[in-house]
Amino acid sequence: MHQVRLDGVSAGYPNRAVLDRLTLRIPALTSTAVVGPNGSGKSTLLGVIAGVIQVTAGKVEHRTDSRVAFVTQRSRAADVLPLTVRDAVAMGRWGRSGLWRRLSRQDWDVVEATMSRLGIGALAHRQLGELSGGQRQRALVAQGLAQEAELLLLDEPTSGVDAAAQRIVADVLAEVVGEGVTVVQATHDFEVAGSAGHLLLLQDGRLWGEGAPQEVLTVDAIDEIWQLPPRRNHVDKR
Image 1 (cartoon, rainbow, N blue to C red):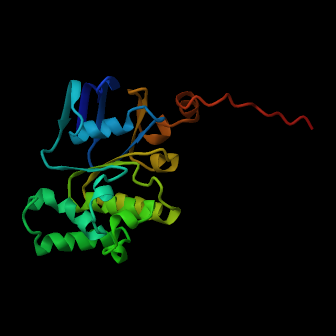
Image 2 (image 1 turned 45 degrees about the horizontal axis):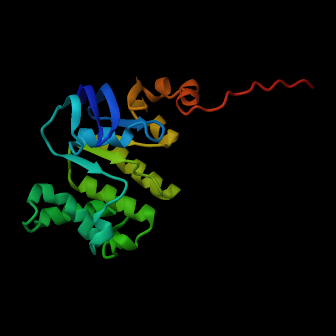
Image 3 (image 1 turned 180 degrees about the horizontal axis):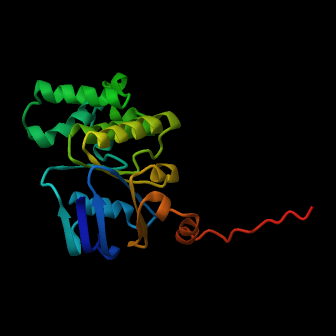
């Protein structure tokens, strides 16, 4: 059963095409890793699925009409607004409560529980712009989780995060998949990609391969996609 289906999708930005006639399926109730070199179209694919980037050709279908949660690498709001961590995570509830309505007790319970889950409860009153890159990234992941969406998209969620925080994020994402959430994350981390239930490998805006990570992300595929130099066979002549 698929959660999202793309058929012949092309998309990009003014004067720059990125995705080229992309056809793929994203299975429901599992974690899908989107992998590829810089410029391969990973972030654009997530934007298309989230509906924030319009396609120029093809069709995108979602299995559910429920709201999609999209966690980007950086929040522009953090650069211009004096947001605390609690404020930022609470923004994830706006889709349910409405922009101008007060959050309910239940909403705030979700906010507190989500911050605790990501290990940032003690940072609740800190300004988001004052945090380290790893702390801010966990706050953005918490904001995404607070939306309680069936489909969670994340663009490099562990970028700039230390090893301990990487483990927290990875564990939480595994937990929410078990709770019925479909997770799709773009990543450069082969270890993260290898632990996913499904993998999409992109090259130059096209799908190079999809399926089980161990079948798609092979040594030969990595060498070809990332254009690594040929491996030499070392012979011990002793």
